[in-house]
Length: 505
Ligand code: NAD
Image (cartoon, rainbow, N blue to C red):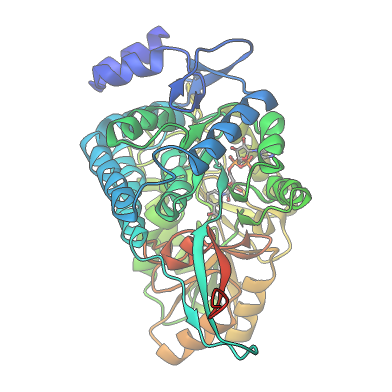
């Protein structure tokens, strides 16, 4: 292990199991086997130091083939294929218990890999994942078809059967590596599917650790396979694989378009959870202090690498200056530290590439005339830190207003009336989420209906729960994760007819 990372682990008393786990090289997990690393590897960095953390295998199309074959086999033969719903439920519940037991270990792995603050990672990413497994486990014994009264000539009993859709290709991003993976696997496992999961190449470690818990919980071999490597090399092979029956993708909109095209060629149904540029609208009666305080979570959380972050704020012109003042106060109060530091409010972003992309957006903002009330650059020193940034603008067409920066930044714009606020908020290719801040209930209800967004919050931003469907419209994709809506994506319906009396005489 790099001496700077060893020192970091010692300073923050990282669990010995974590140090041992991350130190080795990491291969794929296929058919219940942890495969040795052969061939090309990819470097994985530690974001607070920028040093080499470990190496992972660079998967190939052949690795995807092997994983899909294992998943198909597990779907049709072996223990999972005949497992009763209540046993499947027990496995999911036991996985949730094991995640809870190892929450700190998983979160420490995640923080070393991704940079995020440890405390929220335990609470949100890891325990949130366990909660979703428990929620979906409840559905394993509640999958229902229907009988139908048909009018076809003759006498019939007609019914529908709900079956697992088959092998699921799950592709996840690096911003919530463990949590997004839980979003992708909990529902298909409850439905009885098998899975090939591809984590983002920057952040594969927590899910490789999770495979140990799968074995402990009694998940049969081949039910969950993890293939690691570059999306550009194996993503297409996975999304377009003829042995895959459903593609479930979370990531950027450009890659989502490629994944959708590959799935389309294979005629696999697809769910796309893509990018966002989510507006917050604050009317003249809004509680601006509460709004500003909430940006710790809704804008700067996870160093702003949140698809539904409230990254555009439209404020009634009468309170514009006051809003900026509140926001700057919150942004300046955030302590930038390594994610392992208990005093960390905001860790580094995931990579040098991501930091540079954010800084390029700040440059574009300056060139286009945006104002910077605070931040706008990176602090001196090692690691991929970016200062919490509040920009101001009056032109909705600026790139910093229209495009997803995916960093700790928001841009504040004024409006004069409700129609204008909604027009500005809806004038964007994304439609993932949005929020309305007002004490006027009638106004809130009007805005909820007129805002183009998959999730809308009133006097809050970025609330999520296992029971509530999450997913966007327009270029933010389609389909939902979580809630009962998600389970339906992993079930197919078979129509079954019995001809009554056909066996007589
Ligand atoms: P990304 O699109 O670059 O990568 C996502 C995943 O796709 C990774 O596993 C990557 O390796 C893989 N991939 C890359 N090229 C591929 C290809 N050609 N075919 C198949 N897979 C390929 O996204 P990212 O940078 O990892 O994540 C950030 C993005 O994810 C942001 O746009 C963010 O808004 C979005 N996101 C959306 C949600 C949501 O629920 N809507 C949640 C989290 C993140």
